[in-house]
Image (cartoon, rainbow, N blue to C red; front, top):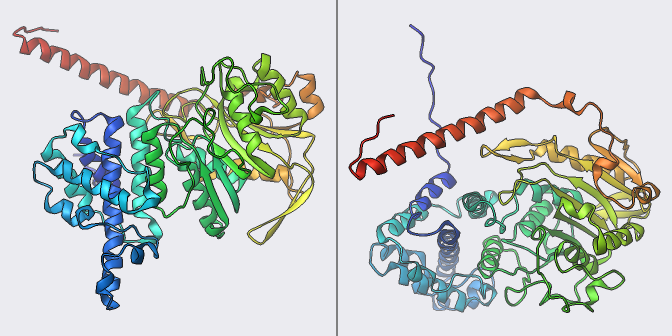
Length: 523
């Protein structure tokens, strides 16, 4: 008899357990809405835990008379919570029919008592959604088990928040998950442009992931977070709140504008000059301005006015206008921007001739939850000349690359995750960024690699009529020989099996419907 292999059931992580509990709300609350439910509750639990620790400190210091004075909490960067906003008050009433109103009151009073949270928390949200009280109570019990302060180094709440943002983006799928840029792409941008210190800006900041990763980059490279200032803007009101909460739980100060607003129609940072820009603006945004609107906007000065039918080049010029004299921008755009005609062609030609384009990097398909297309990472640099820069007490000697652009093709790089998506591992990011930095630095060695990277002179780009499509420059030889057919077939097999399972379930559901109607169907 064959010996049965012993298998150990994988223990669910805290994030997975919490997600399972949150998922029980589905059916009564749309996924696009219950992310605000879950994330605002996690925020309240975290803020309350920090408040209680500070409150105990004041008691131990003999300062009981200051326990209800917000100044004694704010001085330690801790949010002051009135009694009705504290987590123990919510838990004590979690089984009551009016728990939704109690949570709404807690969120309202928390925001009212902490000016830095203005516009950050959902307003009258829980009462409006009319949620199942028992399911909401179960979710509260699960969140109650999170020890948000267990390990400061692990940033438990930040980790949970990030996990939920990614899961919600996956759940909402195409056309709805724009608030989240996949983590490995954000990591790649941060490692390439190296936002050590200065002003960081994101004109379409979504839920704030670019800022979070910038600060993590500084931490990982032993920099000083006090040496960066963060500015951003977000159009969608609910996403604006997500960003403010996301930053608040990490103690990151940021100016996201007084209100959610359209970056083009209401630029809330008109005089900003940023050292680093990181962005993932909406792809191929249509009707972003009227025919006679924003024609004389100073952001286009020196360039043609971007066309009304597609905002790609409006985003580019907005970022160019915000760069400081030594500023660097890393942002994602649809591939069509690499070779478009008309006004896009004229703007692209000037960007190349002005020496602003430093690198063009094609990413693999299926990296985004909102679209399966391949997209491009652009790096713009206002200072590609020979210079020495001190970053974190290390001198970096840059070559003069004013007359060159680095092209990279990453479509054969990446690893699968969540069945149908692609992400970069840490090793992938190291390979990509070291190639880019080796190309930049005098003391490093760089060479063109077929099917991966190529450094093109401006004259070569002129001859190709200012196309920035990497395949026009990178050498491709015997591409089929480099494909691992085993990996490709394994991926196809997984995808096909999933399709068959879905079909089988649909068939069962249909048969059950007929059965409930009193009809039996034999297959």
